[in-house]
Image (cartoon, rainbow over all chains, first blue to last red; front, side, top):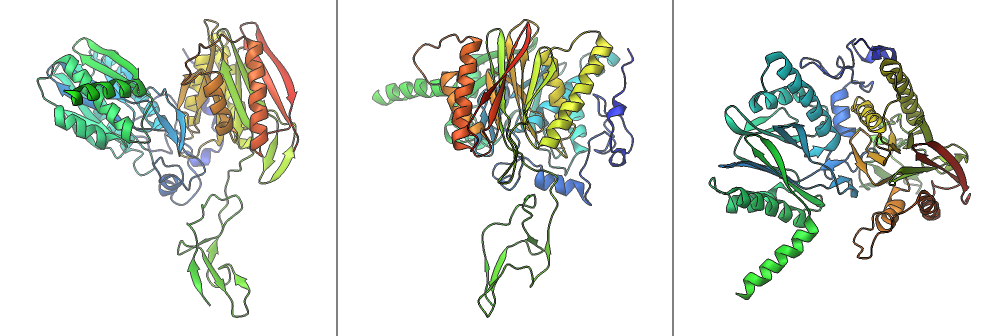
Length: 278
Length: 259
């Protein structure tokens, strides 16, 4: 189906060296060619990084503050992978939302998490979903988690230095088993068994490292993920809201828990009181 | 002559054109005769042009069971001056979708025009009117394509979806969006949202939440703007309120204080 091109909206072509503004931005495209309009200054990259960046406290001077997302974690164990996230989104000191979906369902067997700039994460992970679907159509088989995370890392590498903020975990179950990769806006891509990303990640790591074992049961693993996020929401001002937990299994992912961290607080409080009384 | 550091480095986006010295610090010095030199004669300074101007105003939208209500004040201001008391912020995109935007008027108008064109192209290509969730995604992408030179527009999109249920989407400046029950944006956002959290969201309340009709919600909107108008200098004059149902869009204007 041939649709009217969006070229008619290309006003100010001088800042874009040709290039169509399609849904797919080819991996080799630089910011200008891909259709992203840049400010007309000598050094657009550092200008964007200074004025349109996303940061906790580093964006105080900016007129435009963007929504940020904050504690996410994922770990591999014998029963698959558990992914747990909070749902608070902040713009400066203002809580923009308490119900953000920080686990992005790329497709029924691939999950991505959101930490850093909310728009950056959701846009590029949606873009990744498109690339994964094209891969499936071309190769008649599902894309591996390693390849998917590589596609994402290569894409954001093109915009390195422009102030994107994205710290995401790409996870899924493919032919080689459950896989977990960490990808960030610098183009870093790491394979691992346990990651936590965001402003509350240090709190989550403390809980995770204390209780993580490879041979956890599914229920224990889900409880561990839940508790780690709860502790992060308790101490980190930028984390809070609803805690969402997903379990990645061989057939795909399943959402196993969604609850308010405030309710969990009182539940754990009761358990603590009961334990102290013994 | 005494030089002392004073305060943080001023924003280079300042619309008042704050001076920014090459050394990156503000310096206030005093001459021997006692008059104050603001650092402009002793050292070179740079003034930056900012393409952005904040024109003020507040927008609010609430989704009901089978309707959505969206409202925006009509005051246009710049700095401490009111430029007009009659510039509505609402833009009807389709028979089932209305966009309300606060921020910089020029970016808001351009964004509305770009969307309008894209929606007409959609109808031409698909032979039917675009649904509200699809507009929501389109707006998100349109905003993100300007990630490195954002539209200074804080949007709230409201409408009814294909099932006839009310829907509201809230955005940040670069297109991060989410479907929510209610949303506000603009200078009065922080005054209006707590009221919404309490009365519409019933957050942290133990009493049962009533089911609101469209008329109830319109009354709540009016109260919200009266509240914002009291404490926010950029909100006031009048509010245009649109109610969107499967049958269409009806609009009314509610007068506020003009102070």
